[in-house]
Length: 233
Ligand SMILES: [Fe+2]
Image 1 (cartoon, rainbow, N blue to C red):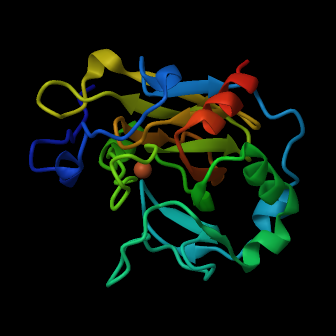
Image 2 (image 1 turned 180 degrees about the vertical axis):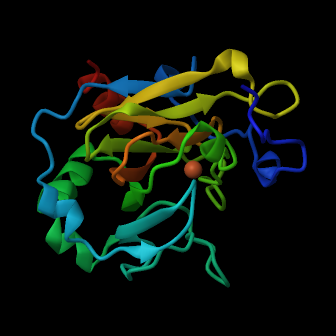
């Protein structure tokens, strides 16, 4: 079976910086992804089902519930719209945060500077549909070169053992290199951290029901390094 789509050099992701002076974490250097231990205590369903979701398409047929944003408003836009050159850090909790106290505590317990925090609701999409949404993130726009590289961490909120996040590093041409493919499992409680500006990524969701996950932008540095090492399997 041949995929009907594959990104080429005209893909918008190819314009996103890959090599920059920002300090990165050694523990993420090899593959750009670290699998963490499964969450010990599941996030209660009502903490993600009862949030206010907004229609925002990214990586498929998606809706997002913003839990922390640049200004604390319920808003899915990036941190740098209009005149506002706000790095994806120093986020402020929204009204949704009151509905999900254990999510809020989880994010605060990381201890690192965090940016966008939101839950994603992703409708099912098979491999061929997902690959059309394969992309890299623009996580470090306006982030000063001397500040830590912003990466993203996930907690899977629903149980989707037949779904996975597809990751590929860039080849010499900047396009995804199939030789580097990694498939991250998406069972309930699965946790991982990904350099989504470095790696092409998308979720292949083979379920029949929407998949929910928590996504948090975090700044690389000694605090995040300690947190990762304390949460390895
Ligand atoms: Fe992304």
